[in-house]
Image 1: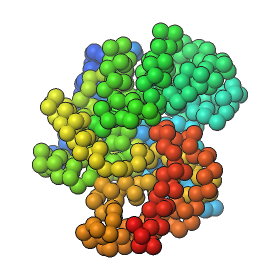
Image 2: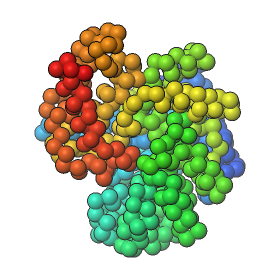
Image 3: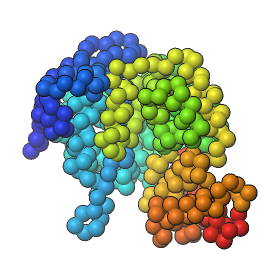
Length: 463
């Protein structure tokens, strides 16, 4: 019932020729390693995608050899079905997964809430076409809205069905932190789910049990204190060169503190938001120019990925790659991986991050947890447009600004083109449904009102 595609066949389907590859044995806690060299037959191009090798890290809990680049399965492209409903473009998903697997990416992270509930099924369809031993599946118990045991068990059991697997390699308690231990107890202890999941870990249905964290330092310390009782096999944190020392302290924690605490306990780390929702891949022009001066050939994303990957306790770095060019560019960074020097890490987390602090962007990472909005507002799209204009230096600020009128018209035109009229910020009725869903704890209605007022001033010429 399942079509199994061998390595030679699926790399041909991905359009890159045929390959032969293997893996070398590794040792050490999240120790760096390499896959065997990938060799493409019949092509003269000797680029990294054809001759490079994926960086592997060893999980000393169970000796898994995990690719340093992990696939975040939350941003696959969507299309309309015959009834006009949004569904994943499965052919596109298959092609991306095939190509990623062919180039050594073996960690795939999903959730019942990603892509409006469609991620696990799309990911399962793509991965199940390949031998199960070739990849690791990560997914989550995302029981945000209903803490009951029945609802939690339903999510757990459906994950196996949608992902087409008999076991889950890396299972996370999703988005812990806000609400502290009280919230943790309500979601996982009082309903018996922690006892159940520990039993499932003993049986091997869950091979590694961990959590993803969003919150402040006190909440992190509370959850980490439970390590002796529950033994967190791994923890997923937000880490990038901005958050290393510039987190706001209330909604998230400086990543240098998170890393230090996990490292000294020898807990493997999975990194989310290495690009800060894409903002580090498309920084302000002044930032981009400085990085280009250092290395004209390096992409902005590669700097951010190399920062996170340069820390040895990191098991894998997740990236939600929507398009083939994203995947290929990221592969160039993680194949024959080159760690940053200590000076380069400090340059990014101190000098570059200090420059970025002068730009008033919204801390949206485009995770889309807030979607769908019950009133159809494109929340992440509105924030992305706003942030993009700030980073590009095309943000109209006042009539005294040089080229103000040109910038004003350009902003209004680009806003209308990016966001359909009925999905713009002025349609927010402050229903507040989005607020508890946001892992960044953004006051979404307040930010939408601020943007709407700003746009109205632009229209009226009263800024």
